[in-house]
Length: 122
Image 1: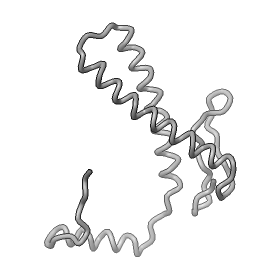
Image 2: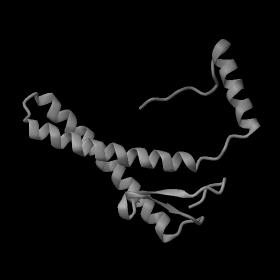
Image 3: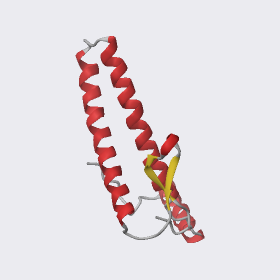
Image 4: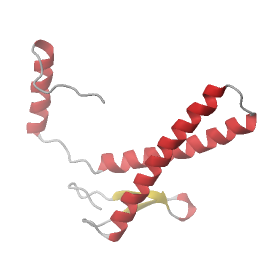
């Protein structure tokens, strides 16, 4: 789908010959939903792979083949996550001057006063 800036959406899969695929059009159409579902699946698989990689590395008893397979899978997952980040980042609206003023105000508050926006970590 196109963003507010009219850019195309980078899809989470490659076309023939490994070339990137893009979607033109705005709204909740079939391809947009398919891409959203694919991104969700790819991010979920990447999270599971991180957990699996930690277990393999924590055991400290792995074969060269296991490490090679893990590196291949992590590389693929990282490529997917990178593509998703590029796609989503390209669709973010361009900040306005008012947005930048708000950031400046927050930075001023951090340098001398307590911020009215507390951070929450879960």
